[in-house]
Length: 539
Picture 1 (spheres, rainbow, N blue to C red):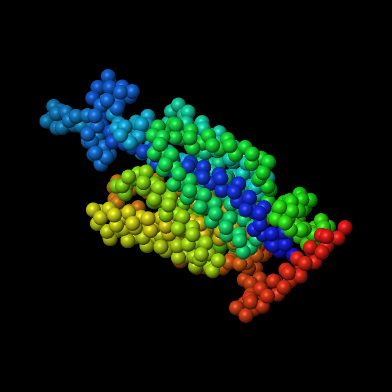
Picture 2 (picture 1 turned 90 degrees about the vertical axis):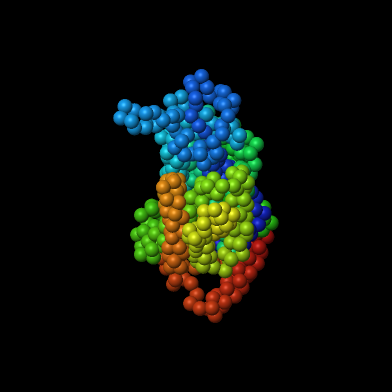
């Protein structure tokens, strides 16, 4: 019996796993808050030059702002007047006393507080890119640490640091400190994402393990939508930042309720702890576990030293790893490229944010329906939908805003569904001894896409078609590459590099062999479970 068979004996998706998913999902809501809050805290409201130094920031609301949003973002809002020089040439005089911002939508944002407009407007996008770079660093650091120190410890550490740094952001005295603190928050987000997902995956049986990714994605979508409501009620950026960060302190009880990964304990030769956890899970699920000596004999184990180099050391693993890295990169590039560009749709920002979160619910639901049939075709198909929707917007005139908005929703739908698939697919392709490292390195490439997304969106000011071409063609290439990956649906998780390398040799050759193998496995599992129950009842 391998570990998956033991999970089936004790209940591969019983009460124990369902409670675990509740603990995994709660932080996902807070993750969505942190990931998308810059849409509101870093928003640029309509503005114009302040007429005199006497118009201090505290009296901005008393100064009427007649510029429209489009006008407020143009050069006319960056200059106070035109001056005729001695050579009869007209020079534009930059705003000498700062800017006045409309408070119709926002009471304050980082843009209004630190004047991130005109020549300083690029600092806003730079701050977003540095935040995304924090996710990149966190995926590498916390991914490697989790393989060494365990999923539970790193997950608890990430939640604690995220809460502390998130609250500290609300009290940042200047823009530099703000960016540094946001960078640190970004690193912790990767620690929460990858460890929560892997912990759920490693406690779930083969047939149900895709739920580890999909259910947490539902929670992320819920947070996406809730943020629109919270931001609508709280228009001051510091209060909003505090409101989304402080609830993290409520998760302190995770110290007592969050379990370690039994699979990770076995891979690191900590059998007694693993057996104790398996026995506890069996008790909660109303099942039985064989005596400890027999379990040790069945499970095997032994700690082995592995590093990220092992991901590309063997030919099959190398090919699959590079394809997965690219798909992760594309998913995050397009996902955040579309999400952060939501203000360009010309609709109500709060409502659009809510709809962008809402569209993720049917996307995840469709994934639940098609993923059991095929991981590979699902991954390829959803990437193709996202890419084609972005390319089709190039053929729509700019004045057809409703059509453009619909295509943006379709693109978001396809990429959100692809995002859900890639988590499950990656965890199933990488073996146990490298799973956390593999997902960590994959997230590193993903965060490179996140770093580039704000920069690519900035190209819209120079050429509106360039971002759409990038967001359209890159997923189509990923869709083609996904077809070269192995099918992992209803397959046991590989535990060693050798298992992953010999994947094709371990799979049934045809439908008849596969059905025969399933019949034998079901019969054997039923007999083994009866024997184990009988042994457990013996004194």
